[in-house]
Length: 101
Image 1 (cartoon, rainbow, N blue to C red):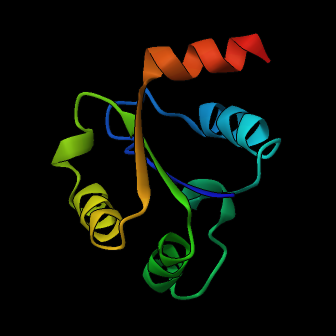
Image 2 (tube, helix red, strand yellow):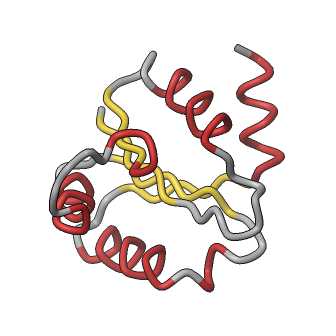
C-alpha cells in the first residue's frame, strides 16, 4: 500500500513535525510520500505528480484553507481521475491517530 499525503501549511496547523508523525504511523502499513519530507528532486512538481500516479491511497489532511490551495486542488483532481482511494482526515483525527501510537 502506498500513501500520498496532501495538505497545506498555510495556517500553520500542519507542521513538519506533524507530517513526520503521520509518516511514522503510515510507514507501519506501507510506503508514504509527503512532499515536505520526501521531495529532494530537482523537478519537484514532476515528482509530486509521479508519486501521486503511483499511489493507492490519497490522504487529504483537511484544514481551514486546504481547499483554497491550488496545488491541493490539482492533486485532488488527479486522484479522482486516476480513481485513487481518497481519505479525508481532520487535524483532530490525525492527532487522535498519532496519540494512539
